[in-house]
Image 1 (spheres, rainbow, N blue to C red):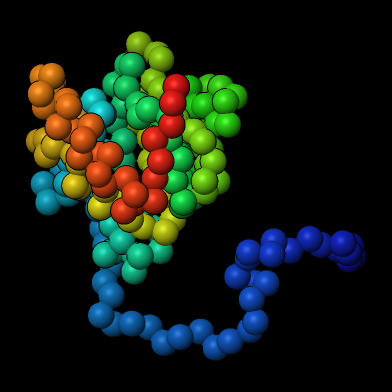
Image 2 (image 1 turned 120 degrees about the horizontal axis):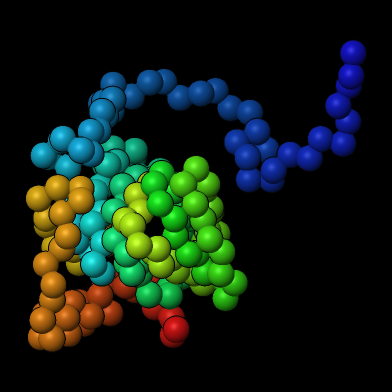
Length: 189
């Protein structure tokens, strides 16, 4: 029998907290089954040329996290930014080029990256095919930002409408006004 010694426990893990009784089940919370391909009640939002489907919101998870299904066409992706929450990307189809603290990496289908809170980053689809990925933000809240700035579209893969110059300027102004509320900062390229 092998006895493990020198086990390093993550200081943020639930096991590093004082042991307390588990709270009772909250019957006010319900199971959420999401079908992003067919559920017409899920919001599909065009944001910076991508289409983001909010699969689970903070309302569904008691604010613990949100889950967003992202359809990123070739050349898609947000500008460099940082924010005060954790963000995990699970690439399901295609690939993205992720820039983290100035270092570029290619992240392919089947791979996952986690961006620590406050770290400068961006992702870009530099391939010739659309990328599909899941984004988990913890705690929740980023989905609310997307609801405020995004344009509703019909499906998970519907491209957002192209913005004319005036609409583009209005979008940028709205984003700049809202980002402090969502603890986000846009960065220079």
